Image 1 (cartoon, rainbow, N blue to C red):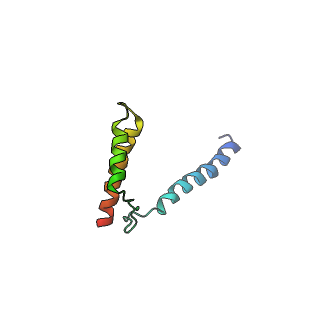
Image 2: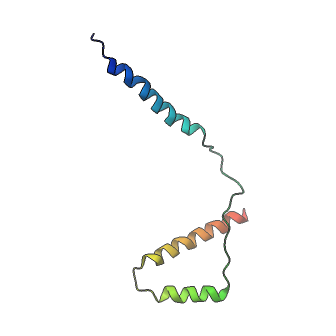
Image 3: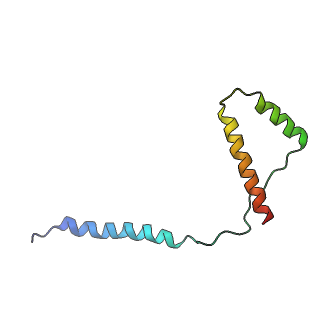
Length: 84
């Protein structure tokens, strides 16, 4: 069998990479985080009406309308988190 110094150098490097990847998994807790809920900003009715009118005036297909829909879902999730 022929001696190959390159093979000897790859071993420690590969071992270091695999070890670092596997050790990253040990720092993550599988327990759910309790008590960390994002704040929910409350808007007065007048501001909500104004925002709704502005959104309704936008043409179909505006990206900001989809983003606002996603934001509404996140606000509901944050409210549910606060109730727990």
